[in-house]
Amino acid sequence: MKAASLSVLAVFIGLIIFPFQRLEGSSSGNFGLPAWVSDYMIFPSGISWTLRGSCCPLQKVSVSFGEIEISVVADNDGAWEINFPPVASGISGDMALVCNGEKKIIKEVVSGNIWLCAGQSNMEVPVSFSSEAAEAVNDVSTSNIRYFDGIRWVKATATNVRGISAVAFFFAVEMEKIQNLPVGIFVAAKGGTGIEAWMPEEAFPDNEKGRRLGALAKDSLVLMAGREDKADFRPYVEHRLAAWGLGRAAPANLFKELIYPFSRMPITGVVWYQGESNADNIENAIDYHIWLENLIFSYRKHFDNPDLPFAIIQLPDYESATPEGKKAWTMVQNAQEEVTNSTKKTVLVDIKNLGDLDDIHPRRKKEVGTRAARAISSLQNRFCKDIMNNNIIEISVEIRRISMWITPCKRSATRGMKPSISSEPMNKSGI
Image 1: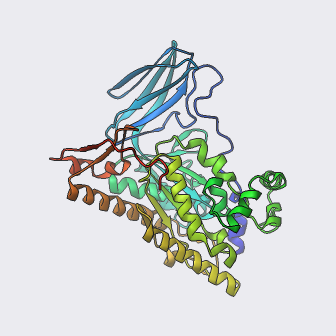
Image 2: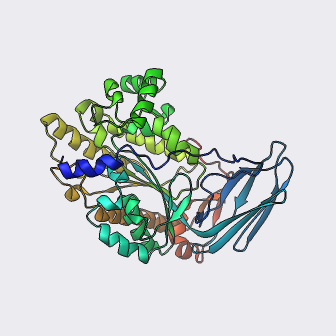
């Protein structure tokens, strides 16, 4: 790896954008909201969705945003939920919530789409590391992009854009151009981490490797080493978890810390850029396709959307130092393509020609984000055509949610069409 990249990345690798998150509905008082409900938030558009929180038992809870005004009563434990109907994108203003006389104003809310951008270092590295940092400052001046940092939403501005994930930011810029609606990016990324760190234990394959990593996920020594690695950054391979052949996070750890706490956030889809740490040897690479398939199904289950779209960013070409490393790298690239060919509502983002053969962290990030946006938009457009050809929009009555896939094509798809309501329950397993 180039020395320049090492010096820059040392600042960022191992730093997670989610230092902590509070539990859904928790609060210092009786009136609690999810962590992702904050000023500048993206209000999900084009879908019905549920907001949950806490209040005093049996008290009235009210919310208003745009033309929406809804009231419910908290249950005996103080828990409440509000089911929002689909709204158009681009609605902006403050959202007011009232509980037992206490009023909370969420400022400068805008309706649009939320995308989870997850993976390891190439998803993590900020705009300042990319070769297009100057372009990002120009792009942000004409965009309405919101960024969730694990604690609160912030507007992307010329002042803060250099610290935002480069791939996620440029993805959002292109998505906003293509679909002409506000975009929110929720980035969960950490350098040097294997796919096993990003999955729940129940999604591990039922084979020798899956069982071994499942055991390590519960091992107190492994968990302690992970905490120590997080507090005391060391060069890769010299980190403590390397003693068990692991990356910079214990199995299932990042799923528990960064994904599961936000599984009720109504995201539009996932942009996944990971695989480098599973391409360091053949043993790690040989069954990557199984792990990736299982990750997709597990996220669809936890986000309660079996049609949740996935854009899989394929590893760029890279010249590994060993013959085994070269073979393993190609195996992961092929596995990523195989999974997108066999798994519904997924698309491969081919960036092979954007790699740097001498650097595992290529600096050209704008084209990566741009290609991801175009690929997933193409995927959504294909789904829209299927809807129009079949003259049907499937709606799950059980969970009162219109498929997120309808959002980009709702104007054309619904014109002159009568939705077909299905009483069949949605497959909760996401498989």
